[in-house]
Length: 81
Image (cartoon, rainbow, N blue to C red):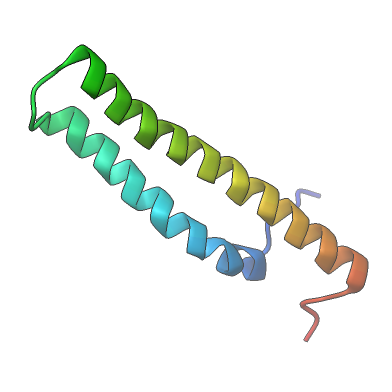
Protein backbone atom coordinates (compact mmCIF):
# COMPACT_ATOMS: atom_id res chain seq x y z
CA UNK A 1 0.00 0.00 0.00
CA UNK A 2 1.55 3.23 -1.14
CA UNK A 3 1.23 6.27 1.11
CA UNK A 4 1.81 9.84 -0.03
CA UNK A 5 4.59 11.79 1.66
CA UNK A 6 2.28 14.60 2.77
CA UNK A 7 -1.49 14.63 3.08
CA UNK A 8 -3.75 17.40 1.80
CA UNK A 9 -3.78 19.39 5.07
CA UNK A 10 0.01 19.38 5.29
CA UNK A 11 0.34 20.57 1.70
CA UNK A 12 -2.10 23.36 2.48
CA UNK A 13 0.07 24.36 5.45
CA UNK A 14 3.17 24.36 3.24
CA UNK A 15 1.74 26.57 0.48
CA UNK A 16 3.21 29.58 2.29
CA UNK A 17 6.59 28.19 1.22
CA UNK A 18 5.58 26.98 -2.25
CA UNK A 19 4.70 30.48 -3.42
CA UNK A 20 8.16 31.98 -2.69
CA UNK A 21 9.77 28.88 -4.22
CA UNK A 22 7.81 29.53 -7.40
CA UNK A 23 8.81 33.19 -7.41
CA UNK A 24 12.48 32.29 -6.99
CA UNK A 25 12.22 29.70 -9.77
CA UNK A 26 10.71 32.31 -12.10
CA UNK A 27 13.53 34.76 -11.33
CA UNK A 28 16.17 32.09 -11.96
CA UNK A 29 14.55 31.15 -15.28
CA UNK A 30 14.16 34.76 -16.40
CA UNK A 31 17.73 35.70 -15.50
CA UNK A 32 19.04 32.66 -17.36
CA UNK A 33 16.84 33.24 -20.41
CA UNK A 34 16.99 37.02 -20.74
CA UNK A 35 20.28 37.89 -19.01
CA UNK A 36 19.37 41.62 -18.79
CA UNK A 37 22.75 42.91 -17.54
CA UNK A 38 25.02 40.64 -19.52
CA UNK A 39 27.51 38.24 -17.98
CA UNK A 40 30.05 39.45 -15.46
CA UNK A 41 31.98 36.67 -13.69
CA UNK A 42 31.77 38.22 -10.22
CA UNK A 43 28.32 39.81 -10.20
CA UNK A 44 26.53 37.11 -12.18
CA UNK A 45 27.97 34.39 -9.95
CA UNK A 46 26.89 36.31 -6.85
CA UNK A 47 23.44 36.92 -8.29
CA UNK A 48 22.80 33.31 -9.25
CA UNK A 49 24.45 32.05 -6.08
CA UNK A 50 22.22 34.13 -3.81
CA UNK A 51 19.03 33.17 -5.62
CA UNK A 52 19.96 29.49 -5.94
CA UNK A 53 21.12 29.11 -2.33
CA UNK A 54 17.93 30.79 -1.12
CA UNK A 55 15.84 28.45 -3.31
CA UNK A 56 17.63 25.32 -2.09
CA UNK A 57 17.53 26.30 1.58
CA UNK A 58 13.83 27.17 1.37
CA UNK A 59 13.11 23.84 -0.37
CA UNK A 60 14.94 21.94 2.40
CA UNK A 61 13.14 23.96 5.07
CA UNK A 62 9.79 23.25 3.42
CA UNK A 63 10.47 19.52 3.32
CA UNK A 64 11.63 19.40 6.94
CA UNK A 65 8.62 21.46 8.03
CA UNK A 66 6.31 19.06 6.25
CA UNK A 67 7.92 16.08 7.96
CA UNK A 68 7.58 17.82 11.35
CA UNK A 69 3.91 18.64 10.72
CA UNK A 70 3.19 15.05 9.66
CA UNK A 71 4.99 13.71 12.74
CA UNK A 72 2.97 15.93 15.07
CA UNK A 73 -0.30 14.98 13.40
CA UNK A 74 0.47 11.29 13.83
CA UNK A 75 1.73 11.67 17.40
CA UNK A 76 -0.99 13.96 18.73
CA UNK A 77 -3.86 12.98 16.45
CA UNK A 78 -4.24 16.41 14.89
CA UNK A 79 -6.17 16.93 11.71
CA UNK A 80 -8.97 14.53 12.61
CA UNK A 81 -12.43 15.82 11.79
